[in-house]
Length: 212
Image 1 (cartoon, rainbow, N blue to C red):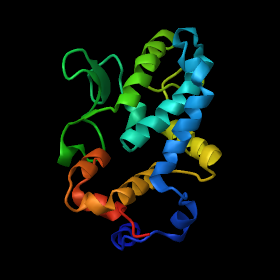
Image 2: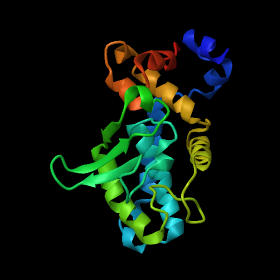
Image 3: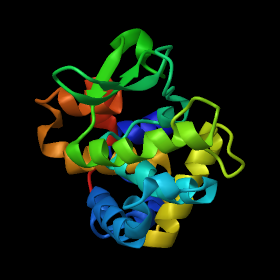
């Protein structure tokens, strides 16, 4: 039944109620407001404690999803190991942080995928990741309030809490990915890049691109 509804490429009544006015770009407003709130922390990352790290992490999560709307794979990114899924800073050209995924839902059909993060996320991660290493010992990008690795379930709840508080709508990862596909609906049929960012086949991405 779920696949049948998706093939119609129509929003369910529940999804229509959750649609924010500005669609996927609602996240831009969240990022902007969080940057203003966290300006004092972002200017002095070496002074953070665990509580500060978790606060800044809220911005990191939303900003990463706006760049690459993956599933819940961000919870499994290693920062000190190149095993399975990881994030790594390349010191040689092309320089910067890259995400490498080899273990994800569609990895058997799509193979290993690598993504270079945008400039804004590069700057954020230059401040954030060194403090993750300083304040935790779990070896992953994201941290829960106890200082341990964040699970996928907690990441999902965090995203929902942030969007409900900041936008007035609860964004599941699936809804966020649908909004991204809808934003790019005009190019999906001819562009493979959108499907690659979603780690989908082109057919799967077309199913996510709902008719408003």
